Figure 1 (cartoon, one colour):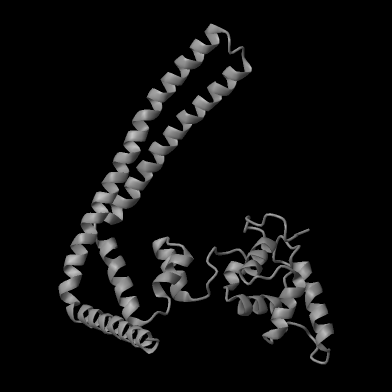
Figure 2 (cartoon, rainbow, N blue to C red; figure 1 turned 45 degrees about the vertical axis):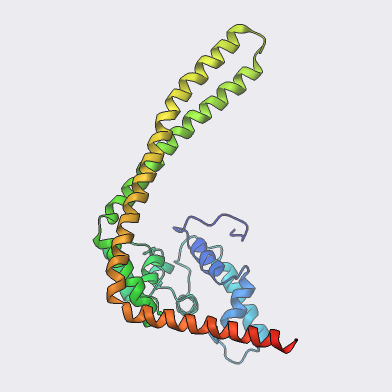
Length: 268
């Protein structure tokens, strides 16, 4: 039986996919989903003559059944449509045939062609004011066209490797100290063993710590160089907009200062 408190990460199981969709809409029970469907006039029940309480009750019972289904063979067609309409998902996602929730064919094609996540694709095509969208698209086009496309993830993964190796050595040092505490600390052999092992792992850890910071610095240098180049290219081509922003902001600040001055003179 599926419960809200159970982990629902395995999206191969139908009720987990349904729970995930419900969580995105802040719905935690079958009744809440039934009420939400009714409120949006998405009512997948047979009789139109029933009253609101009966309809919601009937839907709640059916949805609760669905929240216990591992497969979709017993999922009624009218509920498939209702869920797709309400959650804005594709039937393929609902049936476990696709990991892409969107029913937008452009989003589906983009995800399948690039391997990008659905959320990232939505970011690229989301409806934004034209000037903001132009700047965002222009910036990320620069990133994709530059060597940062390769350098950032490669340096990032090197940093992860070096940090991981460093932490493994640190964990070994902690384990050695804990083991030594359980032994007789007054024993010279134990103290010598602990010091020797700790020294060995410190020697192992230090190069990885140095390499981590080297890759981080390399990343910062490359990103900074690209940003500076892009700024140099951006300013001349957007000079008019920058001037309008500057003078508009300056006038606003001057007006605020003038208004503040008038307020102070009123009290004198």
